[in-house]
Image (tube, rainbow, N blue to C red; front, top):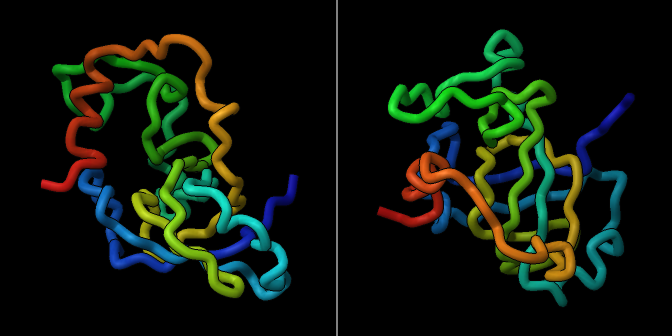
Amino acid sequence: MLVEPIGTVSSPRTQPVDDDWDDVAATITLADRFGPEALQGLEEFSHVEVVFVFDRVDPDRVQTASRHPRGNPDWPRVGIFAQRGSGRPNRIGVTVCRLLAVEGRSLTVQALDAIDGTPVLDVKPYLAEFAPRGEVRQPAWSQELMAAYWRSR
């Protein structure tokens, strides 16, 4: 399987810090093989889903079993597919972001938890029809983990 980045993130965040992503505005610039028409119509949407690569995760840090999220022993050991950590087998991240602007081959987003230089694999408009239908359930430890992830301190 060959996957090529469609663009790159420009962000003031240069280190993979876990929390406080809400106020971060970042720009995704498409690769030269795309023209502005690739983004035509995207400005009509309020949010986009961004698929990206945690490219600076050392392959030796990739997890395939269970672990305590963020190494916190107060939280249960859970499998890598029961958490959203960066040390995933294919190191792929997915985030829903607010779309602030589309200009030429670039889009500006808010709350993208990817650092400067991150390769982007795909951008999709967020459609409410793809949101979960019915009640969403998640364990208490995950709510504790996410408490400061999006809110600025």
